[in-house]
Structures are given as structure tokens and as C-alpha cells.
Length: 357
Image 1 (cartoon, rainbow, N blue to C red):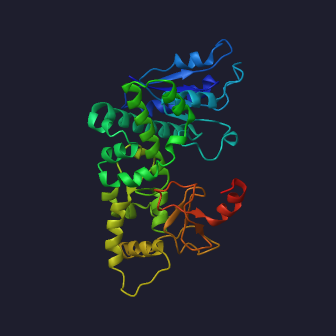
Image 2: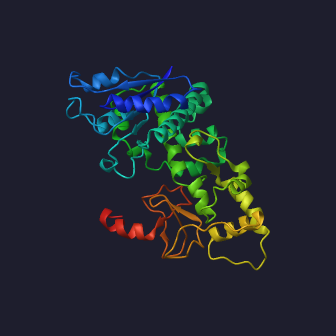
Image 3: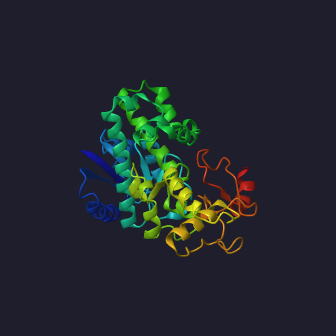
């Protein structure tokens, strides 16, 4: 049976999270395991490995694991052990200030609220499980070896392989633990399969986080320049474009190609002399005509009062446009395939000099 390991130095936290997870997993066959590191466990790594096996699909750990006397043990160690074994791992920390705002490529950030955490964990578990099961049952899929090729085939969209590959440009340098494991050992077929599923899953999560071929609901709102894009009558127009692949339960997602098919038809209904400054404004106008009502503008009080749009800033999570005073183009902060992402200029100018970017 597949399992999830929850790691915390407080049993009460594990009990609370398990109670939230139990109803969410009512229809799944999954074992929820606990590990509370204690002083009596002289070898923390051995204690950790005793809690996992080849069916362990996800590990969730707190950042500080020292309150029971296990000095020097922190979530970062658990993350490194999981990465070496190609087991997805997430941070579930009550002290959010102790964690970086942006997670590493192979690290997941779990919401601190138990019900939200349960939904996130369940969606993440199912996504990695489904990718793993597909690789285990389809030798032709495993033979592709490239994570981008695997995902494109798995999603039934072989034509987007090159787009997905652009998200994977820096994967090889993203985890020293994975590289060390491959260099030090002659990996078995089983490990190679697990590693491919691990990388493909994180690659897909990266695609979902940075809008490109797939749009999150926030990405859709930016694309049509309206915070009301989540309204039922709006999403109904994009029903055929709904993404239903792995991790779909994390949010509402839409295929960009399907969204464009709808918008192209709606924009054609606008007057021939209708002019807009940005694509987002044009998209919103097409929706408004189709729905016969005005859509709420997005929050941009200082630049365009919510009139423009078309792009999403994944760092400020706001709608931006191509105006020079609004955003800057993609750089090393954004995957190359995320063609609908731009960085809000105020944010970029504040942090780029400090980070040397």
C-alpha cells in the first residue's frame, strides 16, 4: 500500500494533520505514517529510513524537529534524504518566517492551515502517484526517458514537448543529492523509474506554477485582465479547455490552447475598429460582449486602474502588462517556457540589484 510519512516533533500536530487528511483520503488506499524524532534515536537517518519503503510516495516535514531532544535535526536534513531517494517532500512549518518565500525546485511548500494542508497533500500525493503508476504500467512511456517527453505523452499533448522542455533547462543542476546518488551508484531500473517520475512530477508542478501552456486560475485572470475570471459564467466558457491531468486538484487549471480557441472567436465579434493597448484588455472585452456584462478590473491602482493586463507575475501574484512601467520580461527568475509570465517592475527593481540579476 502506498504511504505518506508525516514528520514533526509534536505528536499533537501530527494527530491534527492526520485528522484533516483522513476524510480527504476516504476514497484512496493510503497509509499515513508518523515519525516524532526523539533523543533516544541515536541515528536519526536510520530512524527515518525505517519509516519509509518503496511504496512511500510523499514525505511532509516540519522545519524544526528538536523539541524532543533530537538536537541538530531539522527539516532540511529530511528534505536532503528524500531528494537522494527521489521521494517528493514538502515543508509543513508553523513558523513560516523561518522558511524562504520561494521553495526550491524539488521542494514543496505545504499551507500551514490543516484543512488547506490536507487538500494540498492529497492533490500532491495523487499527482505523483498517477505519474508513478503510468510509468510502471507503460514501458513505452518509461522508454522516453526525457521528463518533458514523458509529460507530453502522459497528458496526451505530444505537440507541447518542446514547450515543456523549456521548463527543464536547469533541472540537472537543481539537486546535488540526485546527482550524487547517480554518480555513486549504478542505479537500478526501479530507481531510474522512480527518479523519472520524481523529476517529471516536479517539472509539471513548475509548469502549473508558472503559466505557459497551462494556466492556473490566477493565470487566467491575468490573461483576460479581470479578477472576476473565476466567476461561474466565465469559467463555463472555458469548460472544454479545463486541465484534468496530475495535480489538477491543486487549483483550477486550463489549457492555453483551448482558452485561445475560445477567445479568438469572442474577439472576432468585436467591432472592426475596436482598439486596445494590451492583449488582456482585448480578451476581457471579448468576454464582456459574450456575457453581456462588465467584468471587474484587476487591482492596479497606480498604473492603469486595472484596464490592461495579459501577463502574470508569479512573485507578486498580480496581473501585469507589457507597459514599460509595469513589468519586465523573463530572465533567470522565470522558466523559459513560461511565456505568460513577466516580473512586476517595482518588485524587480527592488530585488534585482541585491541578487545580482
